[in-house]
Amino acid sequence: MTLDVPTTPPAGLLTGTGRLGTASLGRFALTDGTTLPELTVAYRHDGPRPGKAPQVVVVHALTGSADAAGDWWAPLIGRGRALDTDRLGVLSANLLGGRYGSTGPTSIDPRTNRPYGDDFPSISTRDQAAAHWRLLDALGIDELALVVGGSLGGMVALEIALQRPVAVRHVMPIAAPAATGPLAVAWNHLQVQLLERLGVEGLALARQLAMTTYRSEADFEERFGRSRESDGRLSIVSYLEHQGRKLVNRFDAATYRILTGAMDRHDIGDGRGGIDAAMASLASGGVKVTGVAIQDDILYGPQQVKALVDAALAAGVPARHRQITSTKGHDAFLVEWDQLTVLLQEALAA
Image 1 (cartoon, rainbow, N blue to C red):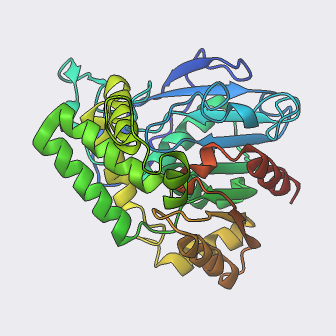
Image 2: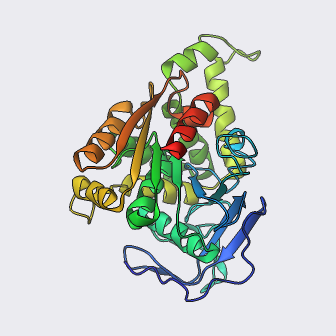
């Protein structure tokens, strides 16, 4: 795939600011041959600039943003934290196809001067990783000590390492498989059908359905049981409806469809001769792998992460399997800060 890398970095891009910014990165070719006339990527970089300290990339999950250090992974990024910004540069970018500043369905198509909407092309985790590398090139970051992400972020992290194995020291996919399995595709299909048939109401229902896969039976039992709200509704129903409303207020159906489609297409072996061959390329580049599973994750279960690690080991990759112990299910990578701190420190020390 040709990445259309600009010959000179765009002007005005900064690292080490701890602020959200955007980079205009020129035309961008997708793996299916489609070309976006302009790629914009929103990003935040904390800590020392490239060349002054090792650099880390943190990749967000389905509805996340570039603001890992100020929002969804704030307990892990900063002075004295697991990703210590006194010693590490930490970059997070909004994924291609996302909602928070990067080119996606809500962006203006320069050819029409209207939002892309449902005309935005289908993308893959491979495209999202290539967009990350376009940004990294522009920022002057050519080596990564660690690439880490959970769920969709873990899938993209794997692709970032696979696209330039010699440039990545360690990759840590959390609650993410080598290829998306049929059960996860089935759940995404149901969510997309709700979007297409019911519009905004469908987006709320899709989020409610998704929330039942993000948590565990133990978590729901512990938090809600058979309790009821003052209006007589079961508390779990009230919770799900609240989550649906929250997403409608900050997201949109077209972006949700594009990002779930990228997850459905995720398969590191596609076009590379299979998963074993993909892992062999990591081995040849010297990439280390830590596959992190989550107890009671029903979306991308521990057995899927174990299979990824086993494939890596069979290919000669220095790989290890770790598991987060939690009742929170798939979403444990957004709440189990102490365990995540240990895992990140271990990976950086390896």
